[in-house]
Length: 155
Image (cartoon, rainbow, N blue to C red; front, side, top):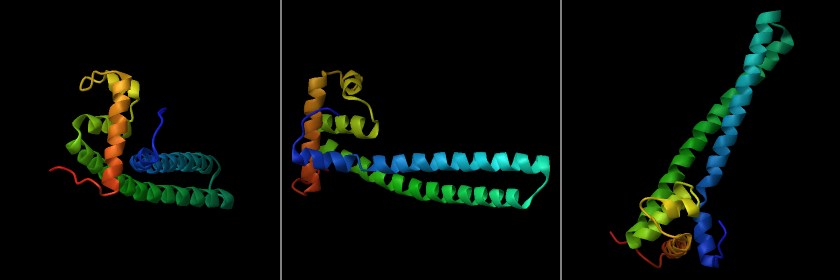
């Protein structure tokens, strides 16, 4: 995102972007699982072709341990990701109760992960990029105020 932000807007931006790290870690764990499964498949093929030897058996055990560790990581990270996603989703809903358009922009940027240009072209927005940036800045200001407990969400 290329816009000049105040210190407060940066704080809100970092908070709203926080669950991206878990998503990245989850993706890394999926890659590790794919590699471990690939190693297991390769070893299984070797074992079937040559018969079980000590070193192949050790490699198989290591591959199975890596698979189990990756599955545990994925399970744990998916729980964290779901909790963080819900927290961000609820938080953006609070912003949207205060300012409908600013909340929509935050939702598109931080949850849907689409660019400012794409937000401007959305059917529910149909505005210029400049207007999207204005809504985004206002949304980040409201988000910071909520984080600082300066403003209570309207119910």
